[in-house]
Image (cartoon, rainbow, N blue to C red):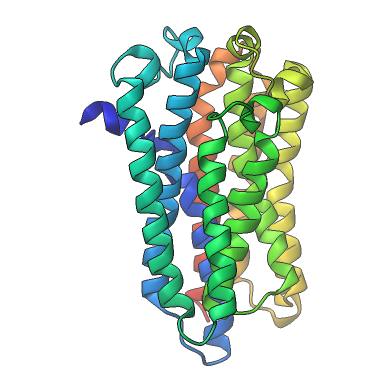
Length: 309
């Protein structure tokens, strides 16, 4: 069991929760303000679904990189994978991927049934398609003849699915309507999530070069990837500030939502520490730190918007 838990890579799970929390509690703030009902059951199921997606993705990545030989370069490094190290066979991991894909689909259908049935059937089927796309994206990063992670498209997909789809989709589950300003916090979460992936790819840049996994970090080179990383970590708080300003908090004098700005100093310190790194393997501890920072960012905005309404 310990090998399966390790393969699930629990340190990545806070990142997957961040978008759901952000979108759900922005929806709660708006619904409560209008005197409408916010359903806790949708939040719980949405969190379960995103955890299933994340575990599915981690198992699929372990399997895909394992059978392609990519992880063979990493056995002596900080993050030894289950299939490559022989702790779990490729067939066992393939079965686990299929099982998690089925569980993810079932959980998705249940979530969408509760959120949309019977009054929003068009939205139900659209989100079924979106759920299937999420499952395919989780698997397709490293699995298949042309996995998009090997083509340098991982950053774009993480940005879209962890940011826009996660935040915007969870917001829509509650409100049944779209608001364009939701793209500001969605982009913030998407950039933080992409920053984690970029750190991971910067750390593995040499092993990926040897296995011909052409990540964006590899294409950019370590120095340019570091510049890219700094940009990804600089903009999220600016985007959240723009979201709060757009929604009139500066004019109303309600400053509680700005509590998220307390992250300005720790985020600055984290960026400076990352910028000092010259050896790729030294980046590994920062993956967890950026992931936790993303979760804290979502929790602080959620608290600021909702606890003092």
